[in-house]
Image 1 (tube, helix red, strand yellow):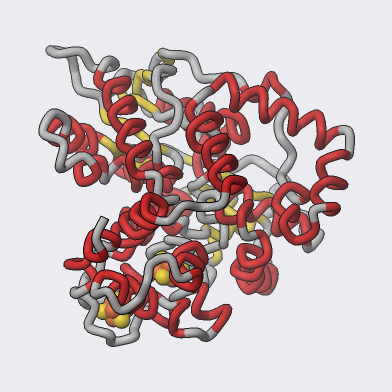
Image 2: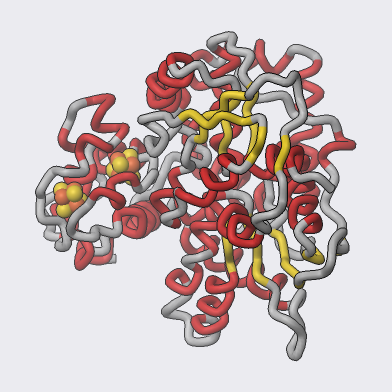
Length: 430
Ligand code: SF4
Ligand code: SF4
């Protein structure tokens, strides 16, 4: 691999060095160092491509790892820099060019090649983690590991096995039928938030949709792509596309694929790009990407104006703050629909957080790999959440849900953390 192939050089040239992205970058806010900013990282990539910096220099890899790939920089960039794509390319090329220590390669192999690809392994791992959590071993182990173990110590409670069950392959509409949709079950989602998947299906069936799911694919490959495992991400993309194609055989109605995880949705909408160089898959991938739709994006325009949404409760209004998942607002440009849905719920007062579009520090597996930085990124948001007097945090991504649950528990807050599908399901009268 030559220097130019180590980065997507053409894309680095789009940056006009204006610096508008600096104030939005969470890692720049933590360090104040130019090299930890989007502009600084692009300069490092360009230096590698032009042979002025050796990619094996530890500082280069460290800055790539430090980035959350939140893509906030993309939303404010006047030059349309595609930073997320650049990072995926740079991380993947670096992993191929520079041999990581054996321990790192082993952990990545277990995580990416074994666990995330197998429902069986994921179920066993979560079962074991729950036992360790219930027996008090996990928090002790996490604390014994020091800073590195903080992610384990503050892992939200893993649900019992009855709640970690998979969705039915078919669920019929409970109202006048409007059509058929498919739902992505996900890899970690059924293990940690099976209830969110069930709420998603429930909302869709209450709106009159038959819901299909597939057990033939596990992980869509989003975590692999974000962490520089692009070859594996392509393999998983092909498997995902094939599995969903089988749900809509030729001649039948083509079902849209509803995704309730912002990170997975952003990735699946870009599979056309990921497989663009593969002549056998490029068209299929683009067709599939065009079918993918986020949960709120699908539901908001289909909720009849006459439909009442009522949150039964104590009789008092619930103060709710919506935190935009980065891969929903910056990755998919979806900001209005979740707010429109929340504003329709009687019994809810929505309060806006100024920092709602800033990353919460979850960033896929970042919170596990870099707990200190991840918590430092969340800290100002926790303060703002408390300051506005919110009682409930609403999100639309499982990683963010875990991050907020852990963060609020650390500051002894009793606020609820819910996915928007859960709140909507509670409010949507049957
Ligand atoms: S993706 Fe996020 S953390 Fe990375 S450079 Fe852009 S704003 Fe900073
Ligand atoms: S906002 Fe865009 S063009 Fe300006 S410095 Fe950042 S990445 Fe470069």
